[in-house]
Image (cartoon, rainbow, N blue to C red; front, side, top):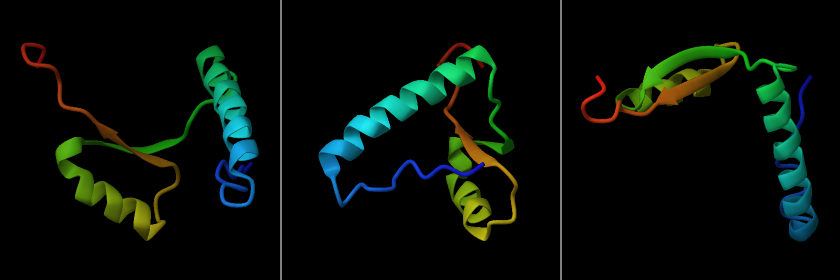
Length: 76
């Protein structure tokens, strides 16, 4: 099911911010509970951000393209 988080941003900015905060809180809770699971199409290192954008822009991946931050020094 698709849900547009950004709907209403320019029409009623105050109402939009309140709704967005409530919606993101709900989604975060559902993710933490395991009620919903994100569909991740690819995980790429941040150094490959250009490739990630190309994949997302092509609209040929089913799911999200996730950029991974570099590992903290000493943990790699």
